[in-house]
Length: 356
Ligand SMILES: Cc1cc2nc3c(=O)[nH]c(=O)nc-3n(C[C@H](O)[C@H](O)[C@H](O)COP(=O)(O)OP(=O)(O)OC[C@H]3O[C@@H](n4cnc5c(N)ncnc54)[C@H](O)[C@@H]3O)c2cc1C
Image 1: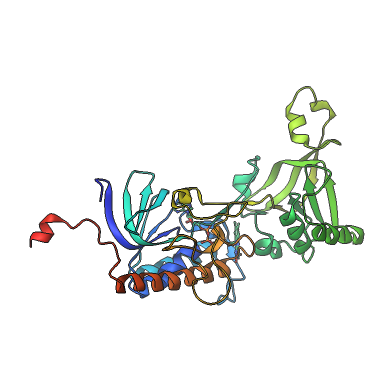
Image 2: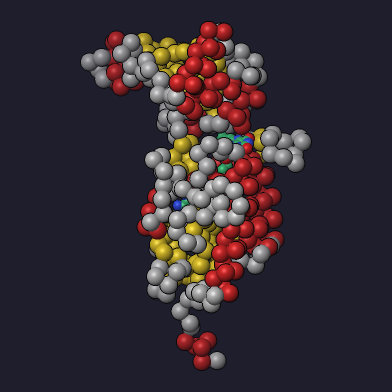
């Protein structure tokens, strides 16, 4: 151990979102003594939302923070420990254990590691965004669409996610508008075709060469309207910000009751680069998947992945929780086998303790 090494743990879990906490409940009950590092979003994405209506077992719905607090209490009851801190680097040491370094310089070592560090929805950084996130502005149509029945809704984006979200929202919306900064979409043909069918039916309207610059409303009453800019050659915001072209841009207010950002997610994986683990083209952690055991294993022995950091497709609380459970079961099998083989890392033996 180095001077900064705080302690050795059997298992460290990155993240206290629903995947990390679900893993912790199982890992603590299997005596794997998990330590969870919270990251800069303790509780994860669910703490950004008010009502969660689709998590099984809560017929009346439950608030995101309450669901997370309940899970944390359950994990703690079985002995899981949590600490503040952001992991900046993980490496696999020659002895087979992991070295986990935090941004404050503290270092932990661990025999097993579960990455449950989630994915952050990209946002635009426009005025109104911070105040209205969770109050009419959302990054998850599947989660929040049903709260805005019969309202006009605006989806921002031009890729698969935007098409998929817009199509989904037609179940609830009066009209769904898609604001896209260019003329052409970057989505798969199948999504474009489906969207164009709904455009013909009048359920979706396209606002091309258009960007959102401000969201207006209050947390009490939700979104009232948005400000949009449009230019026939696309990328209007850039042109609006340039005094040479600002006059060519049309700026206007547009009434909508809800706004959905669908401009992608960024998986939180920077701290894993030193492990040599594999990522897909979008940066998501690659796990075994498939059927049978070890679905959450990565190419690095002892390193498992769960939740939105792996799953670019479902990205739901229940699915992330389920993957957390799988990761805890997989890491338990791994640790049990290493223990049986006498290969667990004990950390540096404290000299005084050794003399006793
Ligand atoms: C506004 C909103 C509403 C939603 N509503 C619903 C809903 O109603 N129903 C539903 O099923 N799903 C909903 N979702 C989706 C759901 O929240 C996610 O699918 C789920 O939270 C994913 O869980 P996770 O544990 O994988 O990741 P996250 O919840 O993203 O948690 C990731 C955790 O990892 C930590 N972390 C990140 N980097 C590091 C690091 N370097 N070191 C240590 N820790 C780190 C973070 O701090 C955080 O604690 C919603 C999402 C959003 C954004």
